[in-house]
Figure (tube, rainbow, N blue to C red):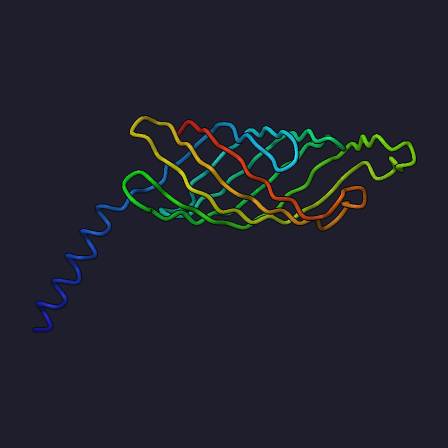
Length: 166
């Protein structure tokens, strides 16, 4: 009985590991979107094991009240939903440089400069049979340092990603 149970468990594990989809070693592309303006980022993903990856984004944000450059790094856990669909979540942070452009002449532009933030990430992606990956994700960000001139220190960043996998 013990041998039969052990054999059944091994076969189940082998079958599950064969049907699981692994993430690509590298992916490079664009991440487009923002919560209160327009943002574009060059996005790179690097696999760190079968279900983990690191994502690095270098981008530009254009809002009604400021322009900013950002560098973001997020560690992600990736899980298969069904077929070529995956969902993922992660944590990370980043830094950037901001230039405020408020229409109010009384606004103090001395708040321009460096800012640091922490970020979370949750999203869904579709992995095509060709080396193309489309994603939609939500990245809440909370300001840690240098957010004096922002309207608030919490941002909801929603974006569409398109990446080439290699």
